[in-house]
Length: 128
Image 1 (cartoon, rainbow, N blue to C red):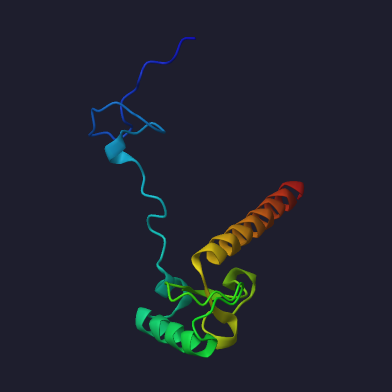
Image 2 (cartoon, rainbow, N blue to C red; image 1 turned 135 degrees about the vertical axis):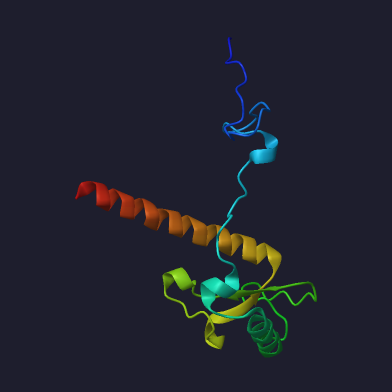
């Protein structure tokens, strides 16, 4: 089956061959480049975020709020109700610790709901 010959990188100064999406390995876009960090998104400084995590860790005795895992490993501070769904960014009642497996599962479910909202919004925009 014939294939296209390799093309040059789309960067005007580059003479290397493109490997993926029209660019060489050196000029591949950085995922999430330009996205604000958590402190800018939530309006909470990193010091305040660490203090909130310490308070929640003491309150919950270092346990995951979903499965109850009390392993002394690194839990992440998580918004119980995501900010995108109306949760408060710094309310202690909306913060809890998650173990890595629960965090991955919850993040996947939130991404699925977010994609469904985005698709529904795009469908309704096409209808009008």
